[in-house]
Image (cartoon, rainbow, N blue to C red; front, side, top):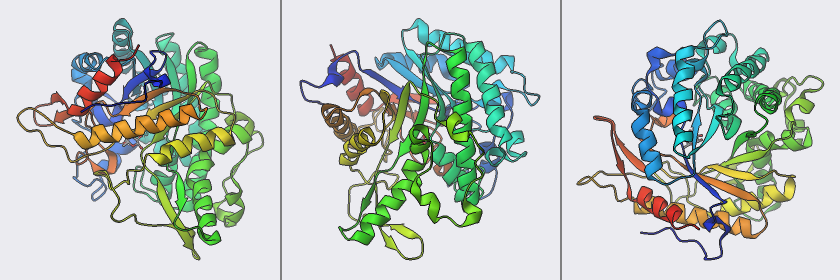
Length: 443
Ligand code: FCB
């Protein structure tokens, strides 16, 4: 089973960066060595995680990181995207935790020694619990605390990091975490969703200034996720509904970065749902970025709804992953070309793309052909966008290995490497072999 792209694809060049991605809470374990975070608390709350699991063990990456780097190196990738656990590197009094910092500096040094570029995300959802207790992302002060953490940790890392992202998917932190409550911290109010989103974006802008000062030679930016919105029919009402959903779920997070305002849908909000925005906030948010990270998994289809404006249509009978997400690679091309048309984008890295499948380890093998097909189709979709003029310069598979999939616990497997949680054994799936062979064949 092979991943094939057209012979003339720019992605065959070694100038294109290929990598694999993970995130701290999802793989690290070793919770006793750091401060508690909102996901520890959320996992401990009954009924929040489907298998009642938590991050205590995960992939035991803090213990097994050297083997995991061997694994990454064996895949022949150019880069590894990881995230820093804020509660591991900072203490309650706002000073650095030397042991936590050491863990990451050792890891970064080893990656560099092996010629693997470190792509570091500063926030992949694990907010220290004591900051949440003080209001979390509903408190404007948290944005300044984040900038302080970014300042301290980037000074420690010096020139080790190839690329910094301030945030991973502020949509998930704000909407899933504060608006509908299916992610930590589990709050559910529209006004909370909108206010936390604003503070996350403010924190991004504040931290960008810090990054450009402390680490001017790295590629600094942000990672946003997009679920392109399609209308169920060609009716004016449905087309408008899909557009509103797009403004609310997607454009909300990118438009302020370039246009210094939120999308028009803000004018439809009840007064109590409009976030408090201080003078000058948009100037902070719209700091120039060196790259934009884009995470893509699926699309969503909408129809008009008199009550809420838009409602999502179930795509029954369509091909789906084990998450129940529709497999629709054309949306990836459409997304990239539409963003390219709307905004003056810097170079783009696809910072996540991948699929959960119902993998089975049989005789020491995981023959995940459906995942290989997913990767082949989506890499081709990216290639199509490149051919249409979009400047995509890298691609990261989500994920290096199976890990804690948030509210789904360990029930969903996204890895190209299989993890047997009983003995922490890692096994390359067919998709890992295919990805490796594809990367090796480049010139
Ligand atoms: C993204 C997250 C990542 C992973 C994938 C499946 O939203 O950034 O941590 O869980 O989804």
